[in-house]
Length: 114
Ligand code: FES
Image (tube, rainbow, N blue to C red; front, top):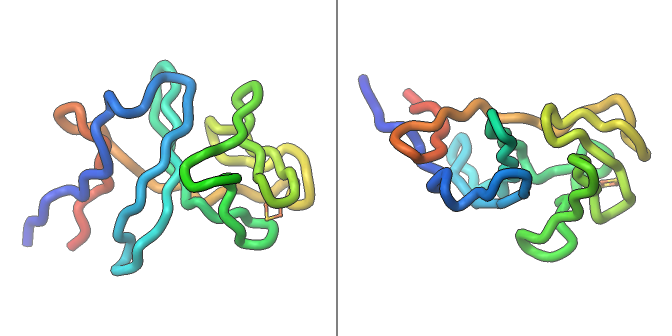
């Protein structure tokens, strides 16, 4: 069975070097997602910190980004936005959960689920 990819948002809505967020159905559950666009890549992570499971934004869709490090608003863990790896803070060495995405016709998409 062929299903359509799950479109998250237009690539143009994600400025290079900035963080955006969208809500999407993942395995039947509505999840908040973090999107980061670099010069040559787009990364998408679940908006859930591995430290205590809290959202990383300090207000809905508002994130602290310093020198390509995403700072969790709850207790200050810092994650490299390129791979989601925690480089300092209470969950150092752990990672944000990343999702595979593709850009199809200018849209950021999750793979089709069967
Ligand atoms: S929940 Fe993110 S640092 Fe504690």
